Image 1: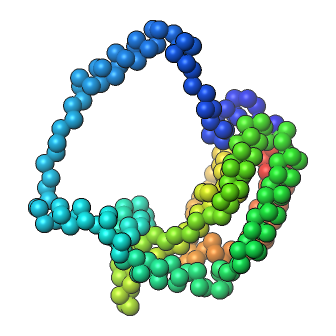
Image 2 (image 1 turned 90 degrees about the vertical axis):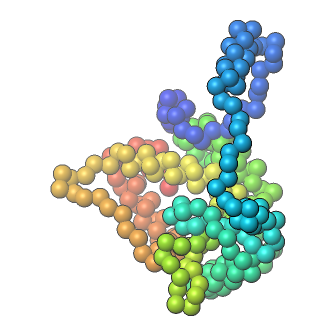
Image 3 (image 1 turned 60 degrees about the horizontal axis):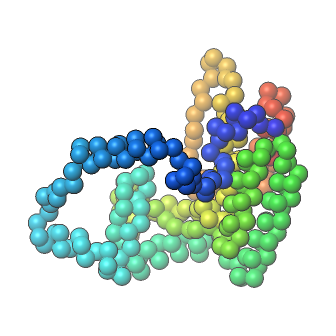
Length: 250
């Protein structure tokens, strides 16, 4: 089981909604907070900045958010938002989703059946390893899984690779993203990432070893999920330098 110190250092916990009442708050706290914000107001004054755009550009910029024919997706590599025609964005997304070698289209009934099975598997896993993963992680995962039951699916979107320029066909390359941020396994994935990062911190390399990362075209979609998980799990379980908690993680 995690020790209390390590458990509290983790961000995997359910935030408390409790707020102390005025009667529970010492008067000196309220006084100091009031003085603090009053001082901030004295130091920082709101001013109207002068725009560096001419009236025509400013009018065009103001009209974009209300234009239903445009979307503003993010660019790849953190290069900020970009403007794309709505119909063009749909076409760029379908380039990926219509690739039957990678994506499978499910009926709503079949998709919901998958979520029911996944939910049961996660709850069973939690019940089996509750004492091992610690109470904070257990509560965090279970609370998030149940909260996402109403909308259990992930989100799919694309990022535009504007740093690579336009293709010969006049279109931009896009990076597909399948985000699990609102899905059933999101919290479990966060816990697993936290554990794997902890494992990486304990790895020891030979003095002449050189760790590196690699990338490839469509790398993640070409990695078979089940063999990858089995190989990773086998490595962790067979590594004698890792604790019991880490071995049970996978």
